[in-house]
Length: 478
Image (cartoon, rainbow, N blue to C red):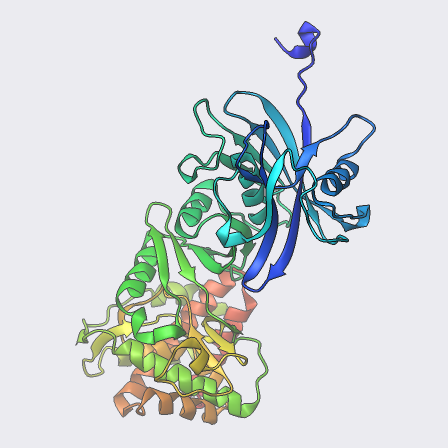
């Protein structure tokens, strides 16, 4: 029976907590005081806080009053910002609602004014909070650092009043969706990622258009950025995890590192690299050439990350199925050219399979013009005005080395300087057989790209395939 039905309305106290922050010599600091005397949680650290005096006082007024009474610091309403609301239940079973506020500015220096209730006051770093600390207060700080707006902290009978990491009762209530069309991670992915890196303050969807694998940039509440990727299928998950565990180390600091993998939910957590995708950037010519040279060198390292094995005979693949979809978009003579190159592919001398990236294209090349190789710990690529790194290994496998050059060909059309720079970094030029094989692989990739782009309404992918076929037809590809 509800309280309304019995005539007794359920009510809980409202208290307010002040989060005062400053930048110290070793990072962000928060002001805490230590409770003392005949009070609840004596000897434990806590934020400046207190109850509202009555219905005449709103939470901002109450916070400003409590701050002045406890610390001597004076603030105006304009200095106060909302942090987080926490519904708390103590081990005794009593409950309350806590309003946590951030204080942007104040006058004076903090000092102890209620000596019968407080025997210590100091600034502490986020990563150096003191113990013992009231669990309720710590929950509010952790929720705020996680970017939460609302949290529940219901302790169980027998729980200590002091914060105990083994009995973390904080439960963050997720925010509602803010951006139409952005897919948030499900609860299982969130939980996996937080087990890997700690409580996460923000999730930003950075998935590429047209891709069904989902990627989020996550910021940990206490600092640091990672990427969380949920693969569209088990094959891509296995490939990326295998590549990260066995081959990616050959790239040194020029590739992300695998932090954790969850095969059940096909999810990985990866470290963050500096820079932005090469796709869409307008770089000076010399800088472009240097990027391609570095990418060539990194590609060579990857191809040498494991011993080569004999390649099996090429199978028929799905060319005919792709041609059925792409045919209306092909120029006269292009279908015959593709069929000819597919037949030629089966007659070329046997080659070897090596670790390949599988999707080496400008969007998977990161470029940073503010970070040099020296500052990232690399000693084998000389420092330069530009730094390149590689991401996305879900299509990595053992395959023909020339397949990694296919999706760069479009970048090299009309830019022989970029092609030359890449193979300078790669360490050698292509043999005649490799050039022929590259033409064959480019034709097959172009047709599959046109078919896939047409079915997924991705005009950029369609146009890239058509440009490749046009370059093949006019013999201007490489």
